[in-house]
Length: 425
Ligand code: DSN
Image (cartoon, rainbow, N blue to C red; front, side, top):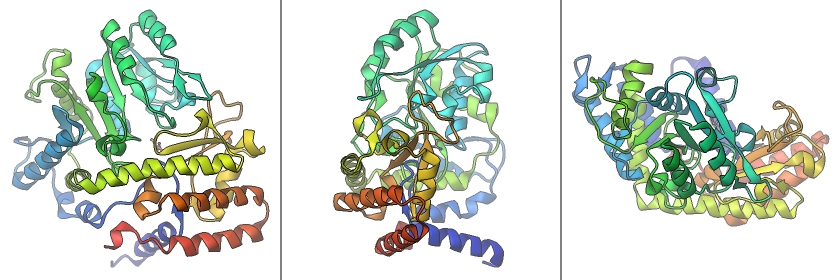
């Protein structure tokens, strides 16, 4: 690389990733093929529109690569249609809202403090200013069970146009059949934001909301799905001409969403990222990906037990997916920021996170959130989880002891270096 300044920054980041252990549950390591596609010459091309219906010339290759990404995504999720153009998860969610709602319409979504995502109606977002978000919660924080009775009462009272199942900090599986029954009762669009667990769904270790009658799935492509940073919307229904406005019916959802993405919200799609999505979807279709997804869940379960044995109080009492939420304030009297910083110092990366009905503020919440997708890609197995839990406990105990933290950091580094990055191949 000629720009040595940026080259140095890239080299430093690679070193950080190589020498540390990545526990942020929304992060992962992509393959060399995914990296190569992202860095490909497709970045030079404008291609507004969709395959076969573009507004610029020279689309013989973009059409092929985008169609391949669409076909693979449909196969992975058993969907009627896929829009592979969303730049990331937030615009994917906004596109669904804009396709189906009028300003002032109501959405019933999971409370942010109980695991929901910012784009599910946090007051600071653009969507929350346009639409009316009502929130459902867990019934019992010790098990994580959603309060489906309250969810139904809220749906009957507020008649939401969308019922949204999905989360960014919830360690249990949702009961999609219950969501679907309630959605049917009030005639709502059933939307699932599966950004965190998309890789687990296609890997066969989490349920697919389409099997329960959901109409739309949104996801990012870079978390458990292990692709480039981007978004994806999957739909059931009839695919029409995106250049013509169809009637607003559930059957027309694929076309309504295509139109909401382009020309509604975005201009030229990022075809280099779409090429990388096609590569990642191809990888996720291979049998090895099922083995990976199963190992992610096994590792998370063992890590949750190992942390519990060391005094970490886990929200919902454990995990059924890739994600763990620990109440470190309740466990050790240290807030999430202190714990995040102590672990950063030893090369274990995770994030501070609010817990349900947190009494501490968002920048200094009671919890930390961690998970196993990236560790598993790196090749770590169940036995290694004990070691990680032990390092976490030692770092918490020694959070003010810089010498001890430095010694732990050396141990983590020596261990991490035994596991190559997938992009080394
Ligand atoms: N930032 C993502 C996560 O970590 O869950 C969601 O937007």
